[in-house]
Length: 129
Image (cartoon, rainbow, N blue to C red; front, side):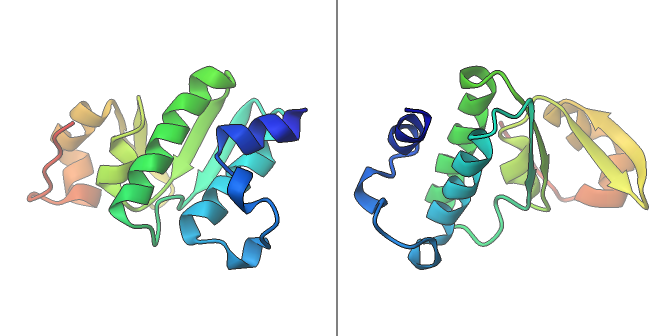
């Protein structure tokens, strides 16, 4: 029942007979998230989940991530080097440099933070959410 629910939620119905190695990058990332949900996690860790994806697939994945928090009542921790994509789907973020927290807060606060600009965003980074 749980597997069928995840197949429906992630829209895998048309591809259930296809081997994972043949799936697109976005489908593979959705599959990995769905498989992780089988274990009823309290926290989901996503590493570089937006890497090598097209704009539409990133938007789809962002929606999934945002909805997972309420649908499954889990916390989600994302590590990624795509600042716009990351900040568009989180409530709070932390900027690390040399294994130290140099800035933390809401996306809007972080892009204004001098330490975050110096270590990560740079002066020309713009974020409109």
